[in-house]
Length: 445
View (tube, one colour):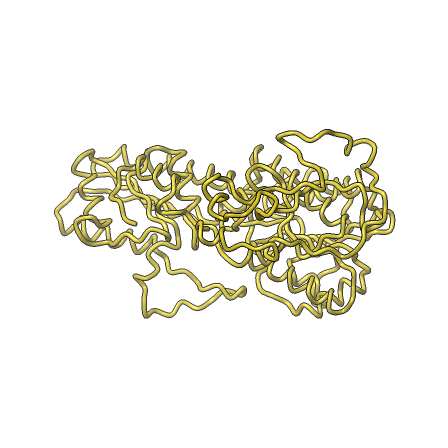
């Protein structure tokens, strides 16, 4: 997001929808809620500032109390739902991501062990499980999810593609579900918004709370999405393998294609974690193949200088090279990407051969293997904390809401805010500057 977009935020953009008055005492009160405010925690009646710098806040020209703020996450002393009577559903949607099972485990544990919720259903195979065509949901208990955090993927299964909100809400009504947790990316969260809107239209007090998931880290207004750190760590391992291959052969060229449909965060972070890369190509920074400052010339110069070269490319880079070619769409309506990795492999091979360069090119595409691994320790902790924050929001009657972290604090954010734009690498930001410094590649803005 850019500064102009941040300055355009209004209180309406940040308002979190609630189902009604909070009347039930929280079982957490008198114990876990007895803590003073500190730099790490603010009370439920405080607010979290959107602006992270004095410069942006000053440009608004308003008093401090009128600055835009997020609702803080965390437990409330009063709840909308009576925990003993509350029935909960959980669904995982979209592509796989490290940490899905950790979030499921965290939700079930917090609901059962701290709030005393006795009925938690896991809907199978994404939103398909909320239709008559879906498989029978499974009962989730602390015992049944105890070890699932050690597995990759999702024990509930997943799918892509939308379903009719009316049909899904009818399923929730028949199952007497009071709270639905949706673990998914921007498309899945739009589906969650549709479910919340349809529930409101029918007068059904169903809380729909999202836990934002995207391996590309492209959901805005949160510090990062879960699974991202595990993903770029695994990607860095692939880069190091390709680097070893490149250095070990005369004229060795390593080419690694990583995920990143619209945002190059995995490519950028994995590069910085590896410190062996000579060129990074991401969707946000157009760099032509040809020309003195293009990809092919830079690789050729790098080979001449050091005898080997290593290139990292995000899958969404260079899609304009396939203009005029029909690619179709996936079940979620996303345009299918053309294979930029194979395109670059062929173009590099042809160029270096024509230049008379002795080279050996190794192409590595770790692809979906990165999605399917278990979360690392850091992501495991983050998943648990996100799950706890989501449960706190839901039990307090928040709906059409996601739990996230902003500038280190957990906050509740309205779904329309986090789905209206996309988080991308800023070509003028400090992350991309670090990449340029690490690789020494030509500057393109």
